Each structure stands twice: as structure tokens, then as C-alpha cells.
Length: 434
Image (cartoon, rainbow, N blue to C red; front, side):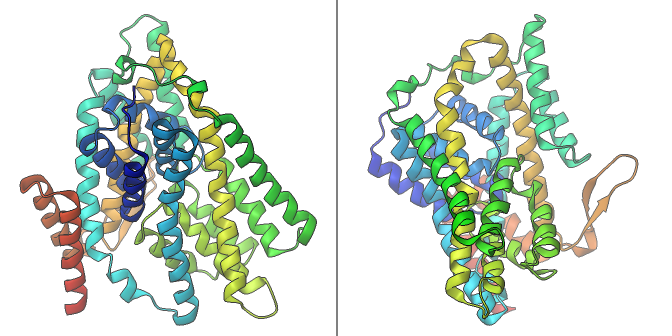
């Protein structure tokens, strides 16, 4: 069973995670694994992987939903709300401030330089977490095969994320049903989680979140009409929240295309500026949608651009994007553990665990390519759809910082905060000198 954890201690940890959750989903999952499983030992490896399995199957940002689920495990509804909100708020506040500066100044390169060294540190943390999770989760040839297949399917062939995860689940399910040796997950060996009735108010919380979400969209239609930019923001990002399987990377191109061509909220190229802000601030990468909503309301909410109207558009975007995440967690989390009591379904979740290792490896590779190389080559021949580095475009300062970060973490075994701080100072020093 989960240990008794003081709520104030958990509150402090969720603030810490929210402020340090750089590096996209791979970095954020690695951070939670490091702090919750290894340092605090509030969850064991099996419980963490089981929670990650479930969140990978949901639409929306998997890292934020993982935080919400773990918070719910530890302290029920209030724990889930606190964990999910604190995972979002620091990044949302940072992007809102940077959005203000963007429309007022138009150039944020100096601000982005502050996070230059932090990215290298995050890459080292991601690789460390990947190695540790793989060592514990891949305990047989079937798991290793599924992890490799999952990585290749995503990295080399760009197959849909849901197809990869569900395909692994089907393989695990059939392996158990047909009597072959199933991929036994460590999660099957853990004492079951508390029954749903031991987390009072969970269903009520799911219903309240659902009503708030639908009420917001319906209320805007009634009060402002479908032509209002606020109604369009609520409609578009609510639809996006339902279909964003595979995390932010799977939908950002669609958001950019619709925001530029259909709604004309952004000018061409501004989505890349917003993505740069989201990548250099903590929190889910999908927070870039807040930047899109900010610019949409800035330009279309009235006759003259208004920072307050833009701020309202940004807050509305974040509200309708993340409120469904709480619906999915509170509605499904109490029932997920029952799957482990059935051999075939447990084997399916175990296979998904193996595939998730490949998913994290793919995210780490994407992060490394875009961090260490200024240009990449997209290969789309012979059925491939993969991103390869352009070696002459290597980012030498970032490469050097990454080597230092790996040395601090793997050789000197420096604590994570000390390593992050050292890399951040080195990055800031380089920015000031150059």
C-alpha cells in the first residue's frame, strides 16, 4: 500500500516539481521518477510504472496526468487537484508573463538565454531515468522486443502513438490468453491500491470537473455567440483536449495550421516563437496553446489590441485544455488497479509498460536532436518518416554543457538540484560572454 505521506511534504514536493519540470514529457517523467520513487520512496517502481501505463492511454499531457494520478493515490481528490494544478501553474504564469513581453517588446532572446544551461541538465536527467526504468521494466525478451519495436515505430516510421501502445497491449493480452509466457510486470507483485470507496469524493470530483468544462463552453455560446473569439477558443481547444493522444508533439502542427490558416490568430512563424517559450519554461509543452489563445484574443477580442483581453484568452485556453485531464483521472483512476487482478489484462498492461520505455526513448531522442543540432533532416523515403541530425549544424556550446551535465550526474553523482544550478550558471555565463 502507499505509505502515509504528510500533506505539507507533498505540497512542497509538487511545488518543486512544478518549478523544475523542464524538458517536455520525457524530462518531466524523469523528474517525478527521481523525486517520488528514488528520493522520497513514496511509490515503488511498480506503482509508478502502473500509473504511467494508465496515463499514456489517455488524451492530453501524460506527465501532468501522471502527477494528478500520483497526487490522488497519496491524498485523494485534494492531492490530485494540488498535484495537477501545481504542475501547470508555474509554467502557465511564466508563459503569460513572456507573452506580455512578446507583444510589448517583440524579442525574447535574452530571456530564453536564461534557460540555456538548464536544457543540457534536463537531457542528462532524461537519459538517467530512461536507463533506470528500462533496467527494472524490461525483464525478458518479449519486453525488450516491444520496447525496441515501440521506439522504431515512433522514431523511424512515425506511426500513430495510440496504435503503438494499443498494439503492445494486444500482444501482451494474446500472449497470456494463448498460454505463452506473459510479460510479468512488477506491478502485478504489488499489494493492490486502496479500493475506490477509500478515496471519498472521487466520482463527485470527476462530475464537477465535467460540468465546469461543458458549462464554460455552453455558457460562452449563450452569452457571446459562436462568432466570439472566446467561444472559438473554448470550442477549438476543448476538441483538441479530447483527441490529443500521444502528447503535445502529436498535435502542435495541427494547432499551428488551424491557428494560422482557419482562425488567423497567429502570423506564420509565431507558433515557433511560442514553442520556443514553452520549451524553455517549466510545465507541459502543450502550454504553448496558451500563447496561441493570448495572441488570438489580443488581435480579435476588440477594435484595439488589449493586454487584458489577451490575458483572458490565455486563461480560458488553459482552463479548457487542462480541465478534461482532471475528468479523465478522477473518472478512471479508482478502477484501473482492478485490471491487475486478471492475468490477461495484467499482461497487457505489462506489455504497454515495455512499449512505454520505447516511447520515453523516442521522446529523449527527439529532445536530444533538437537540443544538440541547429538543423535536422527529415527522411521520408522507403516508408521511413524520421528525423536525422545534420552534423555540421551541431550546437557546440550546448554539446559541451551536455557533456558537463552527464559528468556531474553520472560520474560525480551530484544531487539533481546542484547539477541543475551548476548547468544554469554555466549557461548564463556563456550567454553573457557571447
